[in-house]
Structure formats: C-alpha cells, structure tokens
Image 1 (cartoon, one colour):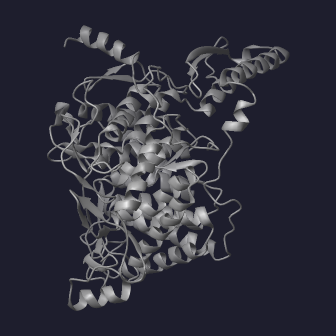
Image 2 (image 1 turned 180 degrees about the horizontal axis):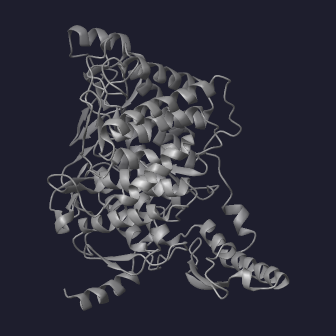
Amino acid sequence: MDREDLLQDNHHRQVSINQPFLRTILLDDTIMSVLRPRWEGSSTCLTGCIDWRRYKCRAYQFLALRTLSPAAGIEMLTHALTKLLLLLGTALYIPTSVLAGNFQKPNLQLPSTATAHKEAAKQIFLDSYAAYKKYAWGHDDLSPLSKGFSDPRNGWGATIVDSMSTMAVMGLDDLLEEAVDFCATVDFSKSQSIDEQVSVFETTIRYLGGLLSAYELAGKRHSILVQKAREVGDKMAFAWRSPDQAVPYPRVVFSRNQALTQGTNIAEAGTLALEWFTLSKYTGNGTYAALGVGALEHIAGLTPPLPGLAARSVDPTSGRFTNSFVGWGGGSDSYFEYLVKFPRLTNTDDQMFLKTWHTAVDSSINTLLRTGSVGGWQYLGDWDAGRYTPVSSHLECFHGGNWLMGGRMLNNQTIVDIGLDLVDSCWNSYASTPTGIGPEAFRWFPQGTEPTITGDNLRFYQEHGFYITSPGYILRPEVLESNFIAWRVTGDTKYLDRAADAIESFNAYLRNTTRFEGYAGINNVNRGDGGGFRDDTESFWFAEVLKYLYLTFDDPSRISLDEWVFNTEAHPFEAPPALRVYTDGELLPPSDELFSPISEFAGGSEVVSGRIMPTGGI
C-alpha cells in the first residue's frame, strides 16, 4: 500500500470506527470545553464533539469568553450551559441517571495510629528509591545485593516511570519533577534491550499507565508526559498488523516496526483498554482507544469454555481461543479486572463489559469457587476441559478486590460478600507464615476430598487450610491491593491492622542493612530467616505495593475509589462521577459514531494497518 492509499484508508478508518464504547465522552471534558477554552488570541474558538448517553455527536463552537464584555460573557455562558443541558437530554435526566455513587463507605474515619503507618510506608519507598538512584539510575530495576541493575523492560528506566504516580500520591514533589525531567530525555521509540523485543502488555501497564497517570496527578502541567506516551503508543500499534486484526501480537521489534507472530493470552491482550483510552483522551485521537478497547471487546465476544470465562490462550492471527483453560490467575487475571474497570472509567453505556464480567462471576461461583476442607476458607481454582484443579497464587489474590468493586457497581451483595471471603483467604496466606508474608503459589483440598500430601506439607495444611507450592516472595502487591479496597469499601479496621502487620514484616524480612541497601524479595516466606534474598527489586514494588500501603492509611477522600480507577499497575486515572445504576442487561449493537474527545491537546496520530499517520501535535 503506497502512502496515498494509506492516507485514504486512514481517512476511511477514522470516520467508520465501529466500537460501542465510543458512544461515551466524559461530561467533565464537555464542561471544560465550555468553561476553559484554550486561549490563543482574541478570536479563539474551541471545537468539541460530545455524545452523552447515546446522543448523536454534534460539533459546537464556544467563543472564548475573554473576547466579550462581562455582560455579553455572562449571557453567552448562560446560553452555552443551556445548550449543554438540552444536549444532554433534559434537566431532569441528569439527576436521575448520573448521581455520584459510593464505592467507598462514606465518612471513613482513620485511627490515630494511621499517620505513623502512612509515614512508615513512605519511608520504605524513600529508602528503596534512594538505593535505586544510587546504583541503578536510568535503568529498569535495582539489583540490591550486587549493587547493580537489570533492564528487562526495554532500558527506559521502568522504576522511574512506575514510581511517578506514587511520588505524586505521597507528595514527593522534588522526586516527581526529577522523574519528569528524566522522561523527557528518553527515546521511547527505541528499545535498549538486546533482542529489542517490546512487550505490549508490560509496556502499556507500566509506561503508558505511569506516564498518563502522573500527568493527571501532577495537575496536567507536564504535557511532555503525554508526548512520550504517544511516542511509545505509536510504536506499539504495530502489534496490530492489519485493520481487521482485533487481538494484538504480544511483542514488537521497534527497530523494524514488526510484530512477532506469537500466541498470546487474554491478560496480555485484554489489559490495554484503560491506558489506550486515556491516551486517546489526551491526544484527541480515537484510534488508540479503538485498538486497546477493541481487543477487550473481541475477547469478551468469543464463545468461552464456560459462560463468561474466557479461555486463557488466544491466537492473534485467527482471533480465536487456542485452549479451554479457565481461571483467575496469571495469564487471565487482569482481563477480568478490566471488564469492571473500563466501564467504571468511562461510564460507557455498552453493557458487554459488565455483563461478561457478571456472567464470569456467576460461572465461577458455580464451577470454580470451593470451600477448603480445613478452616472453611473460600478459594477459586482452575478448570480445564472438565478437570478442576484446587490451586491459587499471589497473582490471583487480586480477585477479592475485583469482586468487591464489581459487586458494588452492580449492587450485588452476594458478590461483595464472596469478595470479602476471598480477601480473607488470601490474607490467611500471609498470616500463616513465620515471616508474615504470603507465598507465590499454594494449594488446598476442597471439602469432601482427602489430602494426598504427607509430612510437613500435610501438617501445615491441617493447621492453616492450604499448603505452599512456591515459597518465594518477589514483592508482589495483590494481597495488599485487595486489602486496601476492602478497607475503603467496608471501613472495617481489621484491614488496617493487616496492612500495619505487612509493613512490620517487610521491614523485618525484606532488608538487611549490613548487606545491602533498599529492599529485596525473599526465597522462602515459610522460613524464619526468609530463605535468603533475591537480587531484584521489581518496579511494581514502587508502583503498587508501597502505594497501596500508603493509601490504606491516608485520608480516604484522597484518591477516592469514587473518583479514581487504578490500572493493573496501580496507576490511578481520573474517573467521572459514578452512575447511580450500572446495568449488565442486553448487549447493545455496535455504533458507527466517531470518537472525538474534547482535549487540551490537538492533533495526534492515526493508526492504519499497524502504522501511525501523524495529524499534528501538542
């Protein structure tokens, strides 16, 4: 395809995006288009396109108010707001349909001890980051034992980018400004790894998520962060090799703009929607969202092995599942997470996402949820072609918080209650070990079955209701993530006690000031000495673990679950006021409406057949 044909195809693609989620443009962006047009001289106009709750897109121009007399400005503002209300439906429609919901329990009160625990979490971050700056600055991960570094995430300084939203949350302004300055120097279009292979999933959740979340949390002052997010997004778009390909290939060689034709899983392909939608929001280019959310939609639309429960493996070439394995663990986990978080971030009226998630939960309750034979703990196991496996993992322990959020959205107390049971079961994996830290993987036996293990494993199982199959801890966040959500949803202070215990355990077992600086993972949580240290500090230690611990003890009105949605790397994105009711009713047909968000950024790029066509810039 030559450039002229490519541009023509690009134009056709731009005006014929066929994605149901594109109906919804956030109301707050619309209001900002009325009240805060970009001032670029005395005759500035802002052109915006909105579509609120199935209303067809229309373009409206609002003359910059500074060009008018005070009286004329007031008159025009009144007229503009009147038009806005009429556009949205009727004045009565707004309060009956778009009232802020409460995901958090209202009026949460922290005990007097909370401040000390919050500061302790911040100090762990500061000590960890100081070690990173000393030995690994500009690289991806700190290697604390060898006082060096590693670059598993393209050599772009993953720890710096992943830490920025945590710095903003903790009020570490000097460190944040330093990190922004660093990001401005990075060429995100070139991978620094030896094989040059860039993971679309990891790069999306850490780099796109980190850059765009920091942009929002820092007051939208640093436009360079959006520019850099677009830079890396433009290259990752080559993971889609044709306009008809819904599921991206998992890796791209940036130097050749070539996707590697490999299989993928639903977590890799289905965990792009929040970040790519937000990139569209701030560039004005809906194609990013069409790609990222289109993958999530496609997977949700496939025929699953069990109702709502997508198979873990999928072939990007055919767009079909390649096995029948289902579960909530690694390879599947964040796909289910985003089925809840995307409709919350956008308030889309496309019911596919929540309906698919609700069906998956109902199916899980019927097929995957079992009570262990010891202790009455609730667990979700795996299923493959009719065979059930009672296995769980630290990664999987996100599910308790996910069920709490989805249950609250659907006002389904049964799901909320089971979510709380899952949170408790995962915390039991922490409370049962000498270190007070949970293992990477563990198993159990459902009620009505006899244990098939012996020796130490059997004794441990009979006491704690699970036994450990992989004893390491690599600084994972999921148990503390669900614990944080449970605190914000219920207000039960037992979740504060658990977070405080985790801080104490981390200080006791994840550092050794006579041997190294910072914090490191351990090899065996079930040994009193931790079984030795691991020479790696993953960037999600900074992005997730320490942020969730800090926020557990921070003012609940800050980064409220009613106002922010966390991506799977714990980077918060601004969300509109929650709807009073979220539905999971009949699926809606596709829409042919154009995504054209109102944004302070003009231009952007357009993706065609895995290529980005520039249409302007910030």
